[in-house]
Every structure is written in structure tokens, then in C-alpha cells.
Image (cartoon, rainbow over all chains, first blue to last red):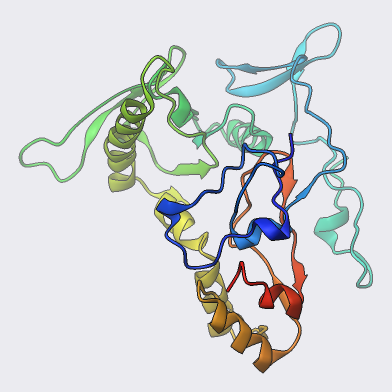
Length: 102
Length: 188
């Protein structure tokens, strides 16, 4: 299924949305129109689904936990390494961009 | 703490508050119609709502809450057995009742209404302008002729949406808009 509209499917700006024929669940070839902005929509080339199989929410501790092979432990803790690198290009990264609590 | 069970940022806040021995009550609006129980009363002669929030594992009275932390909770989630119109009605009543009581008497970080207000990109741009940040000329319109005039005034244009598109698997990045696209009769 293709949910992205082509340029030719654009809906004239200012049309009554109640009259819109855009249906995002309709393949492009079958769709008749969609909002101007969605003509720029692109599909992700690749994305990964988060695997929640080994993660659970502990309602007693009110935290997410992950199974480490032996027991359930907090998924993230205050001493977990956070952002450890910067993708910034303007000089040296800021302190908070490289701060590693370990 | 009003947040999703899978929000790891909220997990860190829970942990940090735990280190300070600050009691935490965490819940999600999606639980409101399932496991989260709630009653509130505004009695004659009292200036504030009183009541309690309860999950199967924790509870808190409204009077005990020193600060509410609003962090991307899920939407209310009426049972699938209801039709769409009924689900909408239930969600609206829940939002106005549950949400209204919480909005009325709690100090929030940040207040949900203020978060919602800040989501408006025109508000953000106006705030940036007041802060004397340099901004590109910006047009928001549903009139194609206005877009054409604007392009003639400023030259090269980019388009960006006012929010994320919300269509699974897709994104609308900031895009250059060509003159040909502005001339497209489907726009005009």
C-alpha cells in the first residue's frame, strides 16, 4: 500500500475539508487528492521497530524494566550513559552533549 | 506524574525523585477508563477540589500533590466495544472531568494547557520574534494566490508542516517549493 500522495493528487488549498476526497488509506493510484503539505511526504527507507518483548512496566516501582537474562532490572537508571557523542558541526560539542554520567 | 508507561525520561524522573525520598504517583490517561480510579469533590465552603487517584498499586489524594509532571501521556482509551461516536463522547467527558480537575488545582510542570499553547508554531515564531531572534519571512495561508505573491516577494521558498504528519511510516521534511509547484492548478 502506498500512503503518500503524488503532486497531481494535491487538494486545492482552501477547499472545504468536509468535502475532501483525500483518503490516506487509499493507494496513490486510487487516491484523488490530498492536502498540499502531504505532497511532500516521504516514506522512511528503513526503520526498526522497538522490541518490547524483553521490557515490561513494573506498576509497583513505576518504572520500565528489562530482563537481563537473570532478573528484571530497571531499563534506565540515573547512572546510565546518556548522550555520549555529538553530531553538531559548529565547533566543540557542548558539555551537555557529551556528558556521560559514567 | 501523567505519562506513558514506556516513557524512559519519566523513568529517570521517578528514579531521581526516589533518591530524594519524594513519593511519586505515576499514571497514564490511557488507564483512566481501565485501571485508574478517580473521584473528586468540590464541597460547599471549600476553595479546592478534594479527592483521590488510585491504581491497583498506588494511590494519592489531590491534597497531597505538590506538583504534576505532564510528559506525553497517551490518549484516553475507551473500550473498543463502543462505537466511534460513543468513544469520542467518553473521551471528551474524561478529558473535561478528569483533566479539568487536575488542571484546576495542581501546580504543573508544565501546565498541560501551556504545553498545548506552545505547540502552535505561530506562537513559537511570535515568541522568537519578541526575543529579537532573526526569523525568515513566513507565510501561513490557505490562499494559493497569497503563496504566489509571497514567493514573488521573498524568492526561494521552503515548506514545512505545522506539526508532524501522523501518518505511520512517513515524514514531511522541510522542502524547497519550486515556482512550478506554486503554479500547479491543483494548488491554485
